[in-house]
Structures are given as C-alpha cells and as structure tokens.
Amino acid sequence: MNEFELIARYFQRPTPRALLGVGDDCALLAPRPGMALAVSVDMLVEGRHFFADVDPESLGHKALAVNLSDLAAMGAQPAWCTLALALPRTDEAWLGAFARGFYALADAAGIELVGGDTTRGPLTISIQVAGEVPIGQPLLRSGACAGDEIWVSGELGAAAVAVMARNGELVLNPETLRLCGERLDWPTPRLALGRRLRGLASAALDLSDGLVGDLGHICARSACAAVIAWERVPVHPALAGLPEVVLRQAALAGGDDYELCFTAPVAHHARVVALAQELGLQLSCIGRIEAGEGVTVAGANGDEIALSRTGFDHFAS
Ligand code: ADP
Ligand code: MG
Image (cartoon, rainbow, N blue to C red):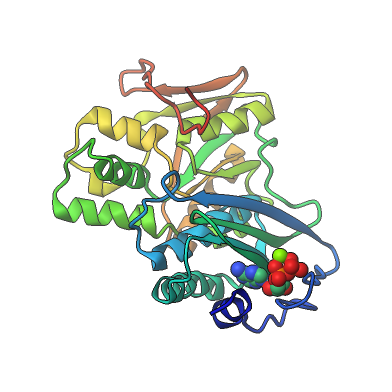
C-alpha cells in the first residue's frame, strides 16, 4: 500500500460542507456569512502524550477530541479539520482502528476531514480544526470580571490518576483503574455546553493541563484573581478513598480532563443551573473572581492549600 492508497482507503470520505475536500493541493472552505473561523492545532507525540501501547481506536478518538475541546472552549461549532500523520510503518489493523475512533467522533461532532499530510516517521499525530462562531460572540479568556462566579463542568481528576497509575506511581483496584483509564483515553469534548455559553459566560477555556494552571490563564488574560473553594471542586467519584493529597493534586493540578472552566456574572447563576439541567451535565460553581492576580485554593477551614505543581508544562525543568 503506497501513500496515496493509504489516504484513499482510510482518510477520504465525502465532505459535503466543504467546497473541496481531500485530493487536491488545498481544500476549499467557505464559512457561512457572519461567521468567524475558530482555528486550533494540537500535536500528539508517542511517549509524551500517549503510551506506545495505547489502543489505536482510542487514540483516533482522543487526537480529535482534544482539538474539539478547544473549539468547545471558544463556543465554536465544529466544521472542518486536517490530519497530519507520521507513521513508523503502514499497519493496516492499526490504521483501521485509528480511523474508526477518529470518524466515530468526527461524525458525532459534525466535523469533516478535508485534508492532511502523511509521512513515515516516529508516531506523531497533528490535527488542525476549524469551527464557526458568530462574529462578536466567541468565548475568550479575557472577559472575566471581579465578582464573577467560576464554574467547571463534569468531574475532575480521574484522567490524572490514570496517568499516575500507568506510570507506576499509584496502585489502583481494577475497577478504579478502568474508570480512570476511560476518562484518560476517551475524553468527551463539551461542544454543546460551549455553544450554549455564548452570551452567558464572561470567559472560558478547556482544562487540558490542570485546573489551577489553566484558570491562571483566564486570570492573566483578564487581569484578575481567582479564589477556589476546595470543597466545591467536583472530584471524580472513582477517586473516592484515595489519599487527600492525591485527590488535590489530581483534581486541582492534573491534566487531561477536557472539561470546560468558565466565569459568569452572578446574575447569570440561575441560567447556568438551568443549562446544567437541560444538558444533563454537572456544572459546579467552585469560586469567585476577585481583583488582584493569581489563583488561590481555600481549604474547608479557609486556609490556603499549597500545591507542589499547579499544572503540566512541557518545558518545566
Ligand atoms: P501535497 O504534496 O500537495 O501536500 P499530498 O500528496 O501530501 O499533497 O496529499 C494529497 C492529498 O491528500 C491532499 O489533498 C492532502 O490534503 C490529502 N491528505 C494527505 N494525507 C492525509 C491525511 N492523513 N488525512 C487526510 N487527507 C490527507
Ligand atoms: Mg503534502
């Protein structure tokens, strides 16, 4: 199987929303009138972002999911993507499973694969996504104001605990390991939530590197401080029974949850609660934006909780 047969077999499907999809020098795309294109790219490298023996179907899902999560965090509707793949060899079983995971999520999210690049090399996956968001309505990191409430979707910490377990830092019972592994390998991009937060949230981002570190980006871009109440942080129930220090590290500073963190004016509180009901998705109010800078986590007695690491940084020494 040569390069072009590989593309035709695994990555060429109809793309009705594009003017032109896979097969020419470029794809041709036209956003609808009044829409801005939200564009983002992420790269996943074997050994750094995923384990060498990871299930290729979950890898196809996750490589797309982490990008869709960025679109969700902007309030954008997924439209088109491109896929750059470096493969050590052409393993048909691997490619078939990867494409299955990729397309199952692509179809569910309504995103079309319109191009890419395929080369031989150490296993690396880079996906670029483009989504549509009405001009003037994207969810930015820069809109938080003192007095706003801080919210987070879903439950945190399970993916980070799975990483700890797979790195041999933690021993889990088989059921906990399975639940946490599922959160790590099959993240759910919160696309419907992101779109519904347009006009409701003042700032938003997705949690890829850890709550405290990521919320710090909102604070920096919005020139404000954040105070989180630890007892209001929704820790994933699979973590029940683990030592408190592990819970804190995983839920506050662990990465890979791909939930949304957003701020909203207090006056929108009831609308956010109603939205959680409607979407069937837990939305937890975990704290408040204040004047100042940086993120503080308060324990039940009001004392500040110190973390040994606030988030993931590829270049931290
Ligand atoms: P070029 O040499 O002009 O960059 P390529 O030979 O790399 O073109 O690719 C041929 C066509 O196949 C292009 O339309 C490209 O976008 C598409 N393509 C290549 N790799 C992939 C992939 N992994 N997934 C989807 N489309 C791909
Ligand atoms: Mg090319």
